[in-house]
Image (tube, rainbow, N blue to C red; front, side, top):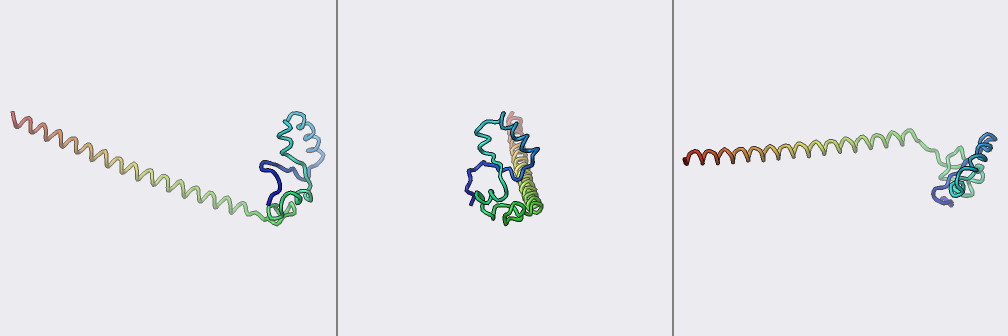
Length: 121
């Protein structure tokens, strides 16, 4: 597994420009945040993260297929949205039918009462 704390970030193989900028950032960022971000080498990452969780370019075994993962997630969300819209449309149609039935019943009752009142006079 991962032997590090949740919410920790490692900045790997930095160059001199980043290191200079990092020195300035350290002056304005809180100690708590700075403790969560560590500069590391590829070799030192293997001390805290198992190879199975690191990508191949960082010396690990994981070879992500982000494009397929992204497309699969997008298709899944589209299907969920379509099902949600279909359910809403069915509910709206059912509610409209109920309102129409109630309106017809009210009109019929009112007409019957008016006929009874008129016929009895």
